[in-house]
Each structure stands twice: as structure tokens, then as C-alpha cells.
Image 1 (tube, rainbow, N blue to C red):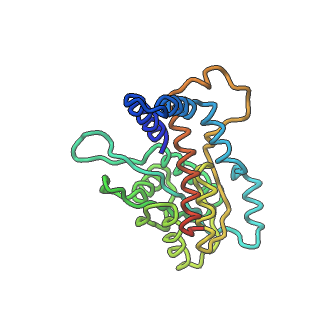
Image 2: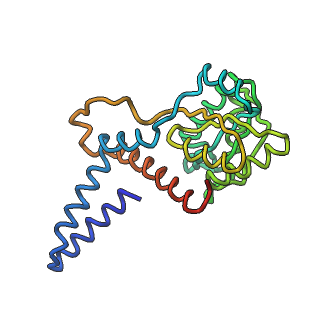
Image 3: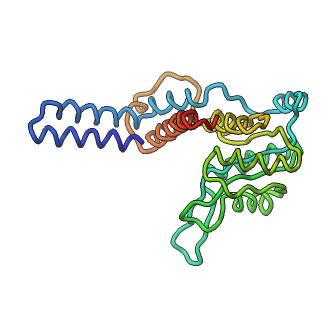
Length: 249
């Protein structure tokens, strides 16, 4: 994943130049320039805008449309987005990542607005003892007073989120859901859930791309935050490509 791969290209160019190879200086320069561009808001916002294109908020009008659909939703599905160890303290404390918290909050709003029962989905990372689903359920029930009916805690990625959630929902005859996840993640998630036979009414939230505006000079200066935005958009695009290659949708 860039920018690491771009920096490696620059280092390789420096090594080749040190050995007197003609390809060294151009490769080093290309690696540095590509890293610079990748870590600017001008690039990150453009790429994320492409990733998030076509998404609309799940507002009152969208809910009325979903209710009137041939297959109205019968559940709200909230997807996890990671959890972390909360500091060096013992006994160990674990908490949801900021993006997971955003998804839980958005899911709680949708659940309250629709009155539909909730499914949370997310497995356990190797460095954690608690599943994402358990942490999400705890936040929803204990802090937000939103009950959770279904609990999917075995998945390792979005494709497994879809497959395992579909099995839980099928046992109760649920074939149509409101799917809650970030706008950048929604196209891949929606396709994965539809591939396992569910009707999906998307409820994207927390857009990371902004409205089209004239770029400011600072938008061309690299920063860690801009690089993180570009990394996330690139990760999602590669995820879509990978899912197509393995037939996940």
C-alpha cells in the first residue's frame, strides 16, 4: 500500500543511482514526487470523492421509499470497523476504533428512526480478546439504550460480515435490511450483502470527501492526515478489485 511502496521506489532509485545506474535518479525522483502527491489533500479528496460517489444519506425520504419497496427492510445491520487496546493499563482495556464508534452512532440513529431490530457484525483481531460485535453491542445497549437482537462475531472482513449475517437473519426470515456503514465503504458492503441474497437499503454516513471547491495552496502540501485519507481511499478501491477477483460479488 502507498505511500510505503512509493517510498520504497524512491529508496530503490537512490540505491541504483549510488551504483551508477542511469535508471536510479529518475526512479528516485518519481518515488519522491508520487509520495508528495499521494500525501496531499488535493489528491486525497479527489480520490475519496470518486470512492464515495453516488451515495445519499438515509433520511426520512429514503426511509419512506424503503418502507414502500417490494421488499421493505426488517432489520438494521451495523458493520464494525476495528477495535484497539486502550493504553498500556492492566487489566487490559479494549475499545472500538473511532470509525467503529461513528458506525454505532449512525446505526443507533437509524434504529431509533425506523424501529427495526439491530444486528451488529465484527469478529476478533489477533491482538484483541473481545470481539468488535461485543464492544458494539455493549455501546448500543449500555450507553445508547438501543437493544441488539443479532450478534455476528466470527467475521474477519466485509465478505464474511455479509455471509455470516445472512445466515443469522435467514433463521428469522429476514431478507431485506438497512445497511449502516461509512459512505466510502458502502459500495463494497452493499455488493457483498446482495451477493448473499439480501436486499440492501443503504444508510451511508460520515462522508470524508467534501464539496467541490477551488483548491487552496495548502491542499498541495503533504501531511499525515491527507496521506491517511488517500490510504483509506486506495485501500477501498483495492478491496473492491480483490472482491471481484475472488468472486465475492
